[in-house]
Length: 121
Image 1 (cartoon, rainbow, N blue to C red):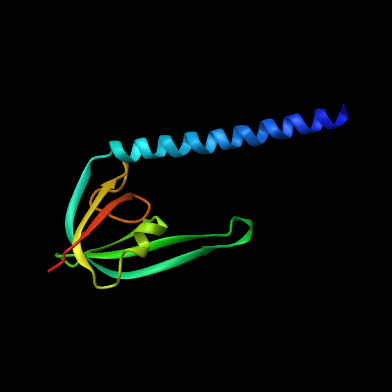
Image 2 (image 1 turned 90 degrees about the vertical axis):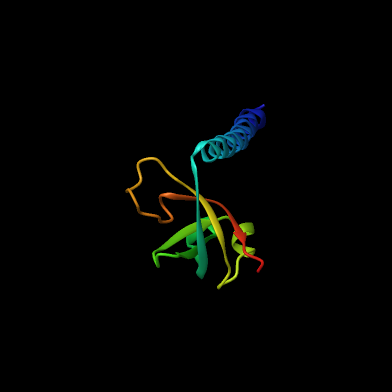
């Protein structure tokens, strides 16, 4: 009986966490999809990774893009998007800007990566 009193709340907590993670992922995707999109010609200048310390054990991926006016923006990407880019790639960067971001400033905190269409010429 004591086993059930401990086991059931633990199972309920695990199920709640799973539900919450799925809900948050769906909500986040919906918010990202609703943001207005922008496109600019860009070149991949650098790629870098940041390893998270401690119990989180993960990696955050960043790519720096340079635009035709020589301005640059460092944007956080998902691992599968990061893997598809190489330094020197040229193409069209599609992105969204998070509401409330500083006007004219593109950085990993205010910019949502949509896609990068590589020029094949």
